[in-house]
Amino acid sequence: MNNKQWHVIPAIIASGILSFSGVLIETAMNVTFPKLMIEFHTNANGIQWVTTGYLLAIAVIVPISAYLIRNISTRKLFITANILFLLGVILNGLSFSLSMLLGGRILQGIGTGIALPLMFHIILTRSPKDKRGMMMGIGSMITSLAPAIGPTYGGILLNTLGWRSIFWFLVMIIIISFILGTISIPSESVPIQEKFPSATFILLTIGLGSLLLSIEQSSLILLLISFLALLVFYKFNRQHKIVQLNLFKNNAFNIYMYGFLVYQAILLGLSFILPNYIQLHLQEDATVSGLFMLPGALISALLAPIAGSLLDKLGKFYPIFIGLAISTVALVLLIIVFNHLTFWTLLLLHMFLMIGVGLAYANLMTVSLGALPLSQTADGNSILNTTQQFIGAAATATAAQILTQSINRNSADGIVIGSRIGIICLTTFSILALILFTLYSQYQRKSELT
Image (tube, rainbow, N blue to C red; front, top):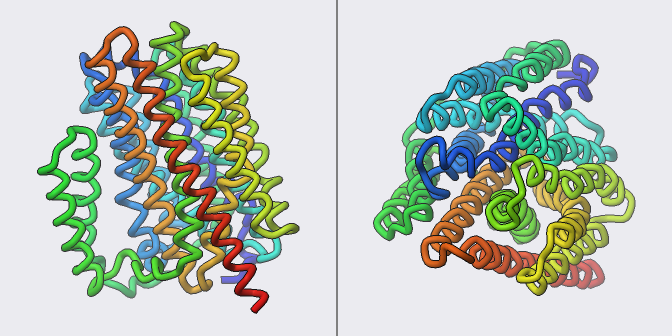
């Protein structure tokens, strides 16, 4: 199809709004967890499934995104994603039980799982190559604005109209996305050329789901079930592919993807740890904990397109290296002063951390996909988005487990101890990402000279 039949920017914005809405609710709900634990009579391990179940739904749907894009038109996929998301939002707005809330979140996850790779697919296939870094930055900025607004949005509505209003206020935004997308994305005929690999899909769902449950319940049996399911999935996937696992033979793709996933773990891990720490230890309300996340997330969102332009002009090393270095230093400082933190010290360190996120996060996704041939871009996009959502779910589940165990062992200081342990884990991953990126960049330079 000719690009002239497309309105590329509006199409990116339309799919970005839907992705934005999913991430907005995800981060908005994080500040409601202390309230929801009381209302639904559960603990941090139980309530974290409001986020983890949503992310798991995305992680399960995204692997089939390459199949869907190859066999279903972009317009039909976009409309389907919008309808599913809208149904999930309405269900959550009416929720009177935790299971009903989780059901709505899963529908939203399926819709977002279609929309996220669709947005980046449109960018990678419809935008000019010399503008791709900037366009990826714009796409990332759209979705990055959600974490900036989400906690504040959630905190204010929680304290004024109640947590259900978080969902009702999104209905009009989703309708705007639907109208803009149907205008800007043209109809096209895409014949179904492949049979859907249902057995492979079911095995992947069981493998990822049981792996998350094994984290949440600290269960070796569930971990074994996950291992066996993923092993059989690997066998089936070789014959009926939904994930092109041969992409992992590309070392550049692996190393850049690791850095990208570390940032996802940092963002989702901290979005669970910090609002709970601020409310349960610093004794601030949901509005304050929501406003806390706003400055840093805005910094990250606004830096994303600028960092994309720097990538286009300067190459990948400097913006990504500087970003990784800033993030790592911020996390190390956070560990050092954690026992003496005030609200304002924590805020400044979080803002410093998010400067690094803004410089490196979206660029790591761009260079990961750029390390692949164009024919493998859709599959690479699928792998990146699948692992991104799963790592986010795993980081949330792990953070919840650490906090729950720490509070159970020490009710007075458990939230402080658990929060610090969680941040130490994230810092370790960040240090490794910085080392790997630096060493591989040096290796590439030497290879180019010889």
